[in-house]
Amino acid sequence: MIEDLDLLASRIRQLTELTQSLRDENAALGKSLAQRDSHIRVLRDTLAAAQSRVEGVLARLPGGEEPAEEVEGEADAPDNASSPGSESADPGARSLYGTS
Image (cartoon, rainbow, N blue to C red; front, side, top):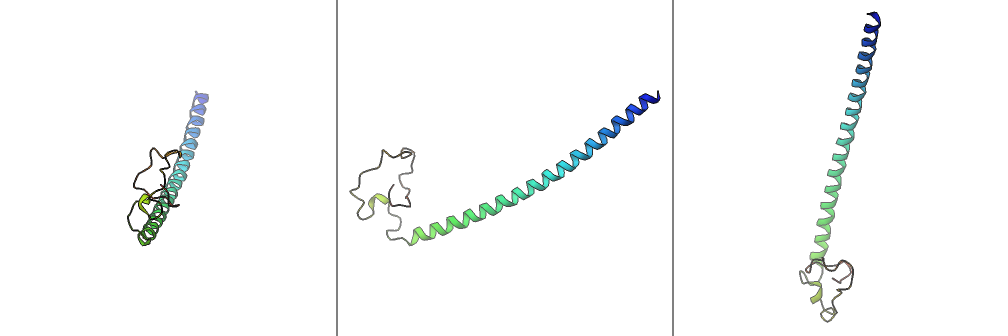
């Protein structure tokens, strides 16, 4: 009978230790998640600011909203259909290098 009680006490102690360990791990994971959420917010803000700056620069470029194919000197340029990824490219999108 005493052996049974000792075994039960031992298992309760193990369960208590495991519970505390899981609580500690849960707290650490919660802290890590909060840090990652904060980092994601910072990255989104940085991305929005960069996008705004790029849009501002594009708005100041000569030619305004004209498609890249209609920019002077490129009207007669052949389509670059053989380049990888050109099938899914947005026809109205501009490249940073002046080609579509």
